[in-house]
Length: 330
Image 1 (cartoon, rainbow, N blue to C red):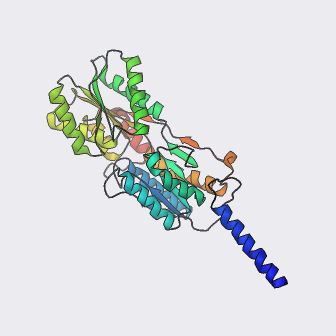
Image 2 (cartoon, rainbow, N blue to C red):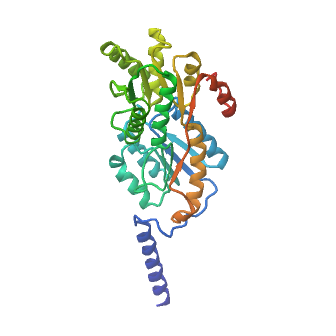
Image 3 (cartoon, rainbow, N blue to C red):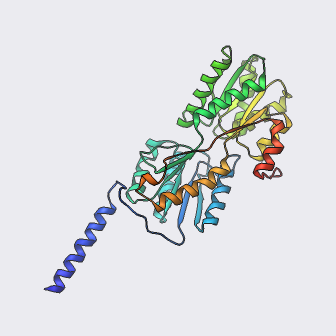
């Protein structure tokens, strides 16, 4: 009889654990420590002016922490469905922590809910909300848009402004906020400025260059652009170089990858607004350590973690490269 009671007690205890593990809430949960965590970043692309810097910082920070770091990205840039599948793969492979780039909350919802049910800490990179993730690291989209307007006005001086903002996609929640902040600030600083068109490039510099060439043909007054995607600025800089428009067409780039800083030095890009992607990669791991150790106790970690931006003009490049140890030969 005692043996039977012991077995019955064990079964009940196991059922209680299984029930608790299946709940969607994350309150009063303490993650157990492990010597080597398995962590996955699922991003929009592999390499590139911005995400290549993030991947470098992320993998270096994982190595320093003694974690098994994995960086996953779709075979073609910005494919949401493939990113969702990569998150599923990470969960199946036993991820201890996830770093998703949530480009579309509705599309990502199911997989993020499954990760939360398994009590996997999630640090969202660049965009997301508390509804699905435990912490966020990124740039303040409002201040970035404002800096874009300030940079353009400074670059162009008293010249009339006919500008076209370019995003990754025209429907991108974070970039939409950035663009609107740019337009609102530009209207305050230069009320007569004209938004000629709003463009997208799908993170492809060649597409960006072709679109500016076509837009310039239809709108000869077009004399500037601001980029909310690294490749938008690089494509515009290539367009300026090909057409010999230095000093006539003003490009405000984004990020501080070597190829962008070289364009600023050459004058094919007027300036760049740096988002510190390498720093994102480093700091997201530090944030994750705190979330993992205190999972469920939200008083011990912040959801919103923002890193500022900086405007880099040609005269600023050398000091910037030295300060952040950027290898300009890459």
